[in-house]
Length: 326
Picture 1 (cartoon, rainbow, N blue to C red):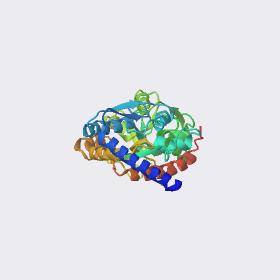
Picture 2 (picture 1 turned 90 degrees about the horizontal axis):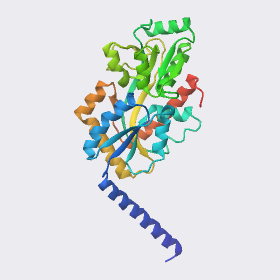
Picture 3 (picture 1 turned 135 degrees about the vertical axis):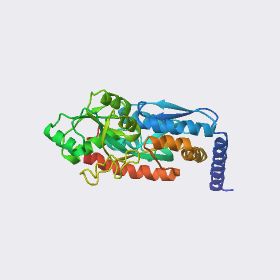
Picture 4 (picture 1 turned 90 degrees about the vertical axis):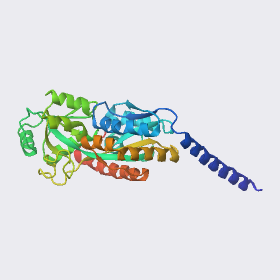
């Protein structure tokens, strides 16, 4: 046998052994708790969505899924940590538009590639941001807000989940589109931003509907608009920014699960099935639906394609917003 044939046989055997090993891993997976990293502080939309699927998935998989909130740098700290984690299925990330689509365009050294450093598991759903104000704020419509901001340039603050997050870029994109000047106040997550908004420390914020709608329904916050092209089924009386005068304005958010790149495909498939089964359950559908998330499950390939499209879209929105890379 020639040396070439010997090496070919070795290579084929190695591939076959790897396939057998991966299959064996999947059969035994999981045999301990799984960590789901949510790269923002508790209380925001990512925590609401992540916790909404984690308990049910853990039940279906037979092992607990532990939530690990790791905020910082617009969600990129926790995202980078997962990218560098062992690709064994035991460390997952709550993927989000802010971290997988905006962060790579906004930060010069983000530390990960959304297309190369993750194995997509599946899409969870999407939700628009809401533009919410404190009840004491004089503007009751988007047009009144724009007029007020023009009459008081540089004196209207807005809170966000942090520099570089979807709510931050959406706010800057809105200000640029409306021809007004807003002052950005970054927080370490949507939860802290809404806490200050409820306390009257800031007049307005951009916040995902899953995080804001309960306060809107209770009357403790007033929603002036939503950032998608279509109205939210949870807030049907709240107009879109596009229909309120800024034609074409669209800034929806997507959530999903990813694992570190190199995670064996049988494990990815096992997690995808658990995710889709969880999303099909009555309790998860009700919970996420009540929070304003439109459930859109799919394959790992579906989510990979969405990450690619979303990053291209938001890189353009970052440019349109005028936010400079950090």
